[in-house]
Length: 215
Image 1 (cartoon, helix red, strand yellow):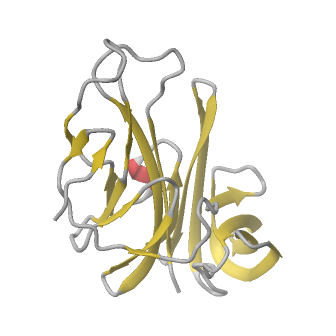
Image 2 (tube, helix red, strand yellow; image 1 turned 45 degrees about the vertical axis):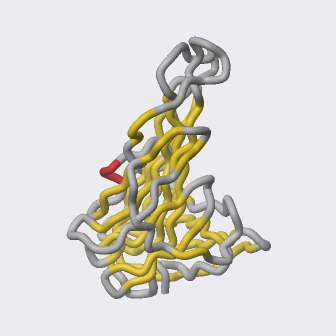
């Protein structure tokens, strides 16, 4: 059990069971419904990698449901297999909004009722059903170098299944691997908080995460 420190700020101790992996730092995880709908469901009719480079790959998925066919685009880190296969019953949800001047996207992919992929640009718990995801608690904050000004604090994001199991921590938009419930998951996150004091004019709190089930 360790207590992390960032610029003199104490963070409540936690045990990180995740491990480093060779996925490219900052490699994106995205889900889009190509028609622009907020929800799409059906049986997976096809899964095809349509573009790839050293960091990421784009996968086109076609769902066939009662209303016809719906196409999805998955953007995955290179080295992560698509978390669904032909014949699976899939449900995709995508919600985009603007917070201040920043567009944020929450996306969820369920396969046969179980979570396979989630991302949230605002730390939304609803995007990852069955998981508890949050930055760790800060126990204290040391005074900033400039009197009266708040200190910017970068935090890891903590991941744990809601029913329990090992906890994983990811920070700086780096990918890590977490073995939990007999499954491998790739996790990625970044959070920014501020200590006490006056905030700079451009200060903003930030909490984003992404996770995807491994093969």
